[in-house]
Image (cartoon, rainbow, N blue to C red; front, side, top):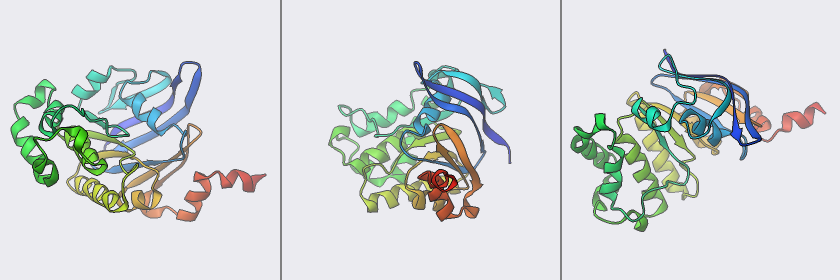
Length: 242
């Protein structure tokens, strides 16, 4: 399977504070790659660096075999990468329908916006029911569905999803994870940043664990030992080594 995204020795952070330390990972086309790790480990910074929202200080970001290190965010969107951010970030004072149409703003997507809108409504029937309501009136789960639908309107080749289960009720988490699993089954390439290890492992093909800005585990999801994963997640391996 071809590598759609290949990151090598990436260093990035905010001002004088470095967050990612020579981080390397790859994403195979048509697979769901899950990035796990504790808060502050660098997961969101990694997605922002891929999207050009955070400048890198070293290393490379290759997409479809081309060096896209520090490319502009708009260029990455035009390349076919959609980022569904943590906290939903919908346009609260716009209707659900208008939020979705914002996802089709790239010129290459506009002609097919009506067909893609139908596809999103078929996938998220509640969004169709609420299409004329303001996004600010949605529940947390509905807002997450709206953010995901908006990303799909972009016709992405690669979908970056940041903490979709954050703050949602368990039943809604199951629904969101089910949708991601469905997209994976359709052959979509997804990078999922998540803290719910149990839920993530059930739908992932490959897992990376990031701690302290470094990859401390890279393994096929089916082979992951949950006890060892949690030891690494909570740095219990470091305590055992002392």
